Amino acid sequence: MLKADGLAAGKGVVIAEDAATAEVVVGAMMIDRRFGDAGSRVVLEEFLVGEEASYFVLADRTNFVLLGSAQDHKRIFDDDRGPNTGGMGAFAPSPLITEDMSRRVCDEIVSPVLAGMDHEGHPYRGFLYVGLMLTADGPKVIEFNVRFGDPEAQVVLPMLDEDLGWLLGEAATGALPSRPARFRREPHVGVVLAAGGYPDAPETGKAIDGIDAAGEVPGAIVFHAGTAKREGRLITAGGRVLTVVGRSTTYRDAIDTAYAAASRIHFDGMQYRRDIGRKALPV
Image (cartoon, rainbow, N blue to C red; front, side):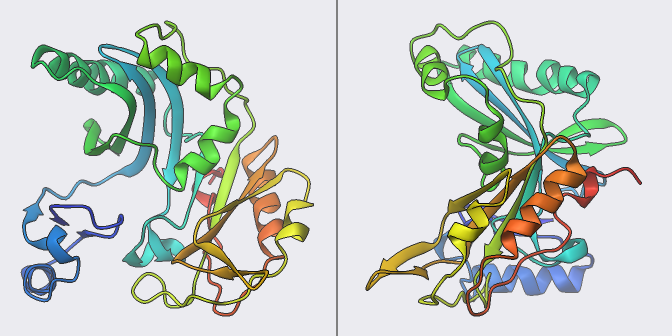
């Protein structure tokens, strides 16, 4: 696995299955400057086999509050095909993060990392995003972020059943409660509506229709991302244009809600995956 050693909008990771592919990728990053300065150095990592999941906590030095889990869909096309993107959709909570797995992540990863930072004189307060690969040997860290993930935030935060501002204030002042955050139990599924040409060359300036109609679907929420207004019309202004979230009592119903709402939105070149949330369904 090769990573651009810098911020690359979530697209700087390539899984090279052989040496020839790796050589081409390194050339694209370091010579062709595909990711700009982010690719001036490249990190080579062990390829991990397993299922990915995202795990979130709000930390105050060594104390922390659990904020739930999610699963992202990074590839542009269905069945995890095509190039990586910033994220084409997500669902929460992740069925892979059982109570036992959550304890392992806290005991083996979150607590030692926060304790180590505190011991080294760099105490951390704020969101900690743990990108996990759940392997046969247990949870392994792919990455840490000091922010919420996107589009994971759009499916996790609507589940929160208490005041986020209050929790942030408690973290900032060292008074976080010694309990998990309160969450609703309904699954949430988010589908990203991306511009034509995304992720390489997204088309912008396309008129967007149907957002009000999408918002009328019971249980649906529409989040703006790459949008703007021009002469009173809403237009596309980025690669990932909107995220349509569906929530319901089951994953199946949440998926159906998200796609029912997404089908009411239209803009030229619109593309989205049709399999978001499928991994949460029983086999």
